[in-house]
Image 1 (cartoon, rainbow, N blue to C red):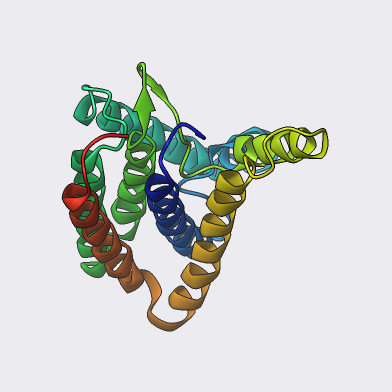
Image 2: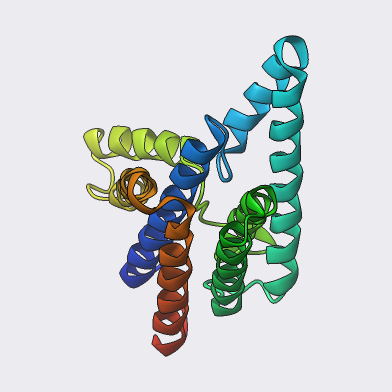
Amino acid sequence: MIRYRRRFWLIAACLSAVAGFVDALAFVELGGFFVSFMSGNSTRLGVGIIQAPQHAAVAGGLIAAFVAGVMVGAWVNRENSAASVPVVAAVSVMLALAATLAGLGFTGAGVALLAVAMGAENAVFRRDGDVSIGLTYMTGTLVKLGQRLTDALRGGPPFAWTPYLLLWTGLAAGATAGAWAHARIGLAAIWLAATAMAALALLMWRMPKGD
């Protein structure tokens, strides 16, 4: 993460904010399921198998959709771009399609497509075939934040922890905005996320090349 230039930290934080926004929309709409946080869905899958099979089915379906999205993102960014504009553009298109489906009354299909989009988003930043910056999940980011803070206290790089705090702050702020937007316009708020992703794709396309 620290090998990226500062401008990419900011882009990554914005992408995480969109992920938090979308996740909050789905969480409220589905009553406690996620489209970007698969650890939570995995726990709901396990509990649901014992207590509520219908909940297990929802969680399992979202997990499958997310993995499919990861595959799509990896295919689009098969060149292992350090900051893939085509992936961001593809996510924007998927969000717009999800908003259209939800607007037409196909809520289930729209939410499933949200999970696909969030899985794909994680392929924006890749190095050597692996995700170098996770954008839609924060457990690993918080672990790295704690590690870098400890390093700083021991005399290491004093600000190496800031990218991880920025990522987490982006996702948390996006989730707050998503909950607020859902309370006012429901899943129509997906259009805001689609527009934001399109703007980020344009911004990244116009940035100087190189990482």
